[in-house]
Length: 460
Figure (tube, helix red, strand yellow):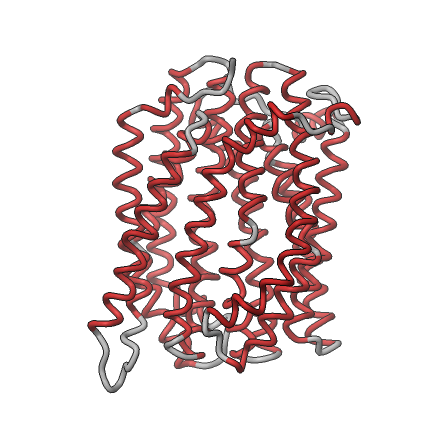
């Protein structure tokens, strides 16, 4: 019983060998991120197998709009994670308690805002993207259900971020595994048994995510040894709210920039027809798994850096940044090799259409080596964010996704137009993504080495 309690307790990342602590903290988070990716993957597999390729395209086409409207939650989550990790490292119980309380209140207000705004803007945005009429209604239904139930998604992601800031990456994993299994079961019931189609997928996801959010809240309420949670800490405070939003807003804007770029490129993808749209969905699902180690190491580096800056141990931050990046590169190299060898079998999981499998694999080969670049970007950006510098990653994201990716995608499409490809070759969108990832890695490394992020610590 004592060992189990210790396993789920807060982890102090300011002691021990840096690379070991980073790996120990990353593994549960990686498994959790893979489980979260299973939400979307299960949706895609089940809807593709039981409804058809057009339904698969509908679920994928909805993603950029969904990501765009989640910007508020990304900002709150990142800001809270930085503040929680630094105050936890500094052993400042009062500021830690107030930060967590403000985070919970802001999430509630943001959820209400998205529940109202989301259903209103969904159809106009889909029309703006030239979404094919054959999948337009499915996309609309999927997004409206998602937005109405947005509180579950918001609270899981934000509260799991708070738990990780406190050094607990295992509890969010357990809760997510429970809800992922439930999500798959509900997908099968709503889609395969009740023939609810795409709306059934959205409903299953909303229910499962809400359960994971409740479990996170219950876990947080039991951590009285680390902080206080009461009506006083839940009250909005101008100073803490401003600091949280100031830290998190650049990361929220980074998500917005990335989502807007995806929306603009999605419009180009839609012009290639349903087959390419469906291929894009399959690739992004496989890509989601391939990118998980990078995202996990990035999040781990943020918590590791935040706690050690709070404890004023910059030597550990430097050692951890080097170790974490090297390990992340090794993992990404392995994943790239596996995709090149077994990728076609992965694509076949989503569809029985051989032409779609071949098209997806050809596009995936373009992206594969980009995961090495993203390993550098995510790890070093995680260090900068953990130190409180969220502006630099935002500007790098803007440069790579807006200034580079969009013009490259449309430029290649324009210059490759032909009778066979009247709107250009579909490879254009993936070549542009690989280009933006590579540039992002170069810029991130340069700004990390400059070291201005060292001056951004919020601890006072």
